[in-house]
Amino acid sequence: MQHLKTHLNDETATAALGAALARALVPGLAIHLHGDLGAGKTALTRALLHAAGHVGTVKSPTYTLSEPYRIVLGGETVNVIHFDLYRMSSAEEFLDAGFREDFNGHNICIVEWPEKADPVLPPPDLNVSLSVAGQGRDVELQALSHLGSLCLDRLTFPFP
Image (cartoon, rainbow, N blue to C red; front, side):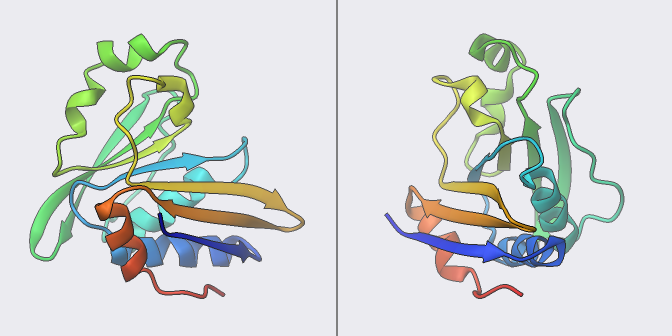
């Protein structure tokens, strides 16, 4: 499958990647974000949501586990659901919370700490791996489906 790698020099570059992803979103997309604490997963999601048209605060769903947002894509209202599964103690919690229903082919689901819900989490269309590298971040985006490839095809590179 298709993949892209780049280095993000600073927070401005991370925000630019978020904005580029916002322009490449398609309904039904599932994005899994990988990286250690402080790697920039929430910062990337915040930039993506703001660039996609969300006005207001974008908070980390560390304690609520999920936060829904509504955006307009191509004239259609779409829910973007930001999950942070860091505090989950088992994959069963994901099922018990009813989160699997959110992966319905229309919502866009962005999942931090997806490994916490293995093996019950639906597979991603796009894997995004972030790692601290000096003052910036290394990022790899890997398409794992047709929707993921469509997203990467629409992504404009390079970033500042």
